[in-house]
Every structure is written in C-alpha cells, then in structure tokens.
Figure 1 (spheres, rainbow, N blue to C red):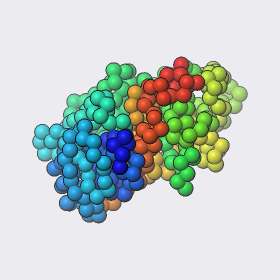
Figure 2: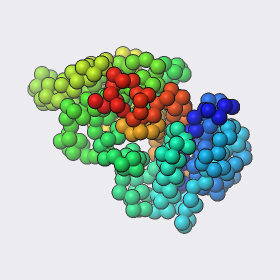
Figure 3: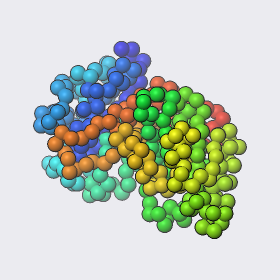
Figure 4: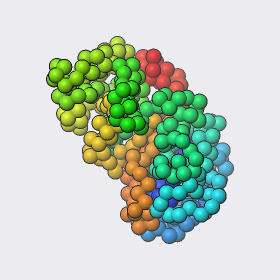
Length: 361
C-alpha cells in the first residue's frame, strides 16, 4: 500500500458502551485498508479485553504504534495508537465519570494528531452525554467539543446525517443538515434565522459535492405544517425560509422549497434531492433514522477537519452480548476515507470556490 494514502483515526467513544465492539468488528470487515491507513486510538488493554470477552469478535492481532507511524493497515492486525488508560475502573454498560473521562482523553489525542497533520480524518464512536457531564465536561457531544478545540463557537459546527445509497452507488445517497441542533425546541425556534438556514445549506452543498462527485440538489424544509398554509399556520416560511433559499440560489446552489416536512423526505428518498436542510433536530433525525438508522453516518460540517461518526448511541443494554451492529461504523469509515481521498479538508482551498470558504460566504 502506498504511504501517500490518508491516515484515518478511529476512536471507540465511551469504553463502557458498544463503541469498542463496533470499531473492532468494522476494522476486520472494511475495505478501507485498500485506500487508507486506519488507526484505532484507544487504551490497548480495552482493545484486548473486548477482543477476548465479546462473542463474535474477529481474531485480530494488536500492534501498538506511534501516532506518526507510516505503515499500512490490515484487516488482520489492528493498529492501536495508545490513549491514556482510565484513571480508575470503568463499569461496563453504564454511565460513569471514568468512562466519560477516558472517552475524552482518546478524542483529545486523536484531535491533536489530526491538528498536527499526522492524520487526515477522524471517525468517532458513540459518547454518552451523562458520562461526559459526570467527568466535568460541559459539552453536549463530539460536535461542540471539536468546535471548541478548534477555537470556534459551538454554532460554527453543523451536524449532517449521511445515508449512503443502499445499493452501494458512490454517486448517490442522502445528506441532512440541521439549522439548529442540540437545544430545546423552544430555544431552537427562537434562534432560527434566514442567515442560519442559508449557512447550513452552504455548509452542506460542498460536502455533498465531495461525496457524490457532482453538484447536489437541496430541498429546504418548511417549519410549519403544510408549509404554513399561506400564513394560516405561521409566517416563518415567507419571513425566514424563502429568503434563505434565495440566498442559497444566489450562491449557485440548486436549492428549492420550502417543502412541507411530511412529504419532503419521501421526495428525497425517491431521488429528487441529494440533501435536505432541516430546521431543528428531530425534523431531520427521525426521518433519516427511519430510512436507514443502522447505515446512517454523522458528519460534522464547519470545522477545518474531516470528522464522521456513527449515528447511534452507546447501547449500554447490549454491551458484551455480541449483538452490536457495526454497519454505521463501516459507513462512517467509508465516508471519511472518501472525503479524505477527495481532498476535503473542511476550511481549506479544496472547497469549490463558488461556495466560499468552508461553504460559507
């Protein structure tokens, strides 16, 4: 394998959850070793315990390597960049301060490796928000932690859910970005603005172009039932959503709407759109997870790095049973490798000029 292939780092998320299991299962199954150099940033003892104790785990050998090691990766040997061991016992299958602290320690090492230029992409396992808070970290999740690590406000980053084409067509799939994210619905509605909706669309368009290899078609969701029924159910459509769509089209983005949310995803699933701009968390999350939760991928937009993640949680209730499904981790690895090989670097000159820097004008 050429050492010019990008380095892609995996983290296992909270060690008390299914993250270590899905990371190792995906390592043995992914074809990404043919086009990238994978590394798992984790406590080597955690890796060994997971391989030994969880039913159905692959027969992997463990190589502990330095973060800047240039060797190829292999489906038979897991290349582990050693993260700090937990300060104390991590109870399996439950939230704890020790689990939250260990997850952040691995994330910080992975982020520093990417920031130093020794890796080109980051794929993260699931965190538990309660464990993060028990460990003293006042962040809702990866997205906001990474924004702050990059010296940016939380609002600089957007979550996109990517659903790869079920048939494996690399030029197809569906991406959903959110104009507001981890906050109460009341707060999200108070914060919603034409500028925020347009910013989300501008972040989404270049990312989808990198994944699909062509300019995407975006559908922008309405906020109110039936798109507001001409003002009978609210004025947010003409006041906020229509100006945002006009701004996106002025930027050269093929965006249409406002589309009533109860039909928009049916149209998108039928191939009418490559991407959807949702206005709040559940408006985007519920449909995409119904369409394909186990193969959905979380991709962070707005940061100067490639970061993808599984779209599921820690699943404490099935830890160690051998029932954890690695499909989302496999899709997250695939998306990260495709973005890295396409030259996507977030805020970089690789973003098509017509979108502006990092998809924002």
